[in-house]
Image (cartoon, rainbow, N blue to C red; front, side):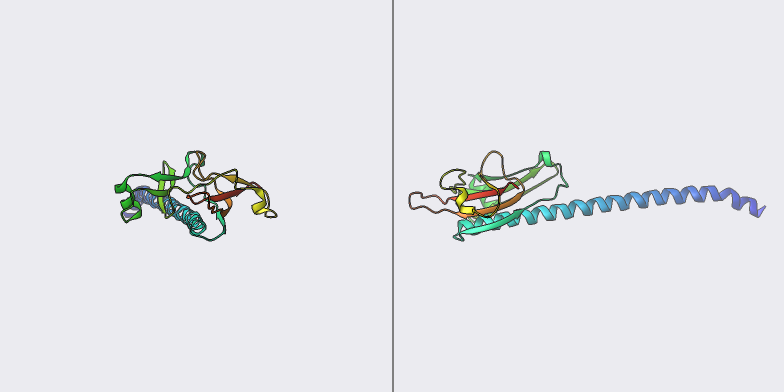
Length: 183
């Protein structure tokens, strides 16, 4: 009789064990997914910081800067936009950049799953021309590059960039030539 009762409870114990294991596996998968997303966010933040530092150092007087701006593709790439924007709200500038600026320049990464905003400590009047005075002679021998407008509607695409300062006595605004490697 004792043996028969033990045999009756075995399927029930097995069912409980399967349910507990299912929950353990689900929690483990959720934890792994969260870890991967957090690592991805960290890599995006690091890439944005590299681009921010490169732009700021060229604007502040370093003549040329190479910036590798490759971001992970853990969020839907088609819905990702990286751009430089001008914010003209003193309240927003104070919140995002600190201080009492009336106008500030921002480096923005936006995706429905993750957003990041970095304050660019450069003049909002900084120009990123694609034509004169930016020409291919500036980067001769470096490979195939195209001049891009980092403030343009297309935004900033991942890739390797060469940033060159082109201060001119004819312009009151900082001029930065941004070249993106095409091959």
